[in-house]
Image 1: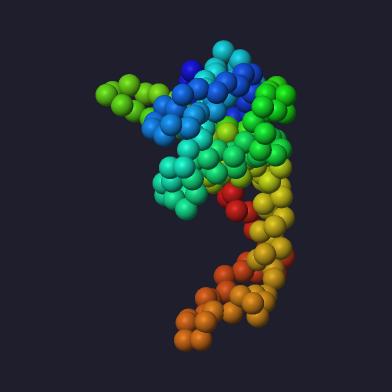
Image 2: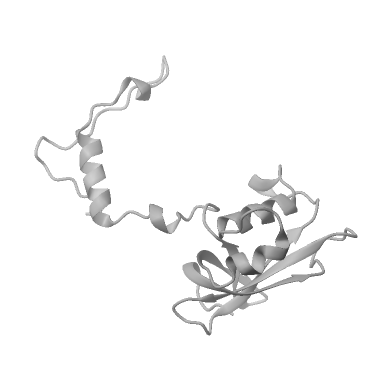
Length: 174
């Protein structure tokens, strides 16, 4: 069980296939992947991916649960579609996971929201920028003139420039 919310690095420690938790189809099943926090192996839980023809919800309502699950598996390093090779391909890998806080009946739980990169709003580890990188980018952005591609549509008011005076330091964290 996890004890706090946030994006953490986890290690995949076990993989099983089980009867589905929610789906009702005759051929439906769940892929169960046990993950543990790299920094604290006592924090672990099972992620379940549904393999069914049921459609997802929200931004994934155009994909089946099987498609969503395969997308997740590919994001953690699984190649192809032969699930008999899943264990040898991903067991032991370190991947990002998002843990979300849920409160029910006055109790707080920390559940796996997703595993792997490229889902939700959390950036993959190789896309996270340092404060120094942000400062440099902001300096460069504020010094540039807007390009033609950034011009507002006809009739729309043009934003007023608010760039700092020449030579002035801009600190987005001030």
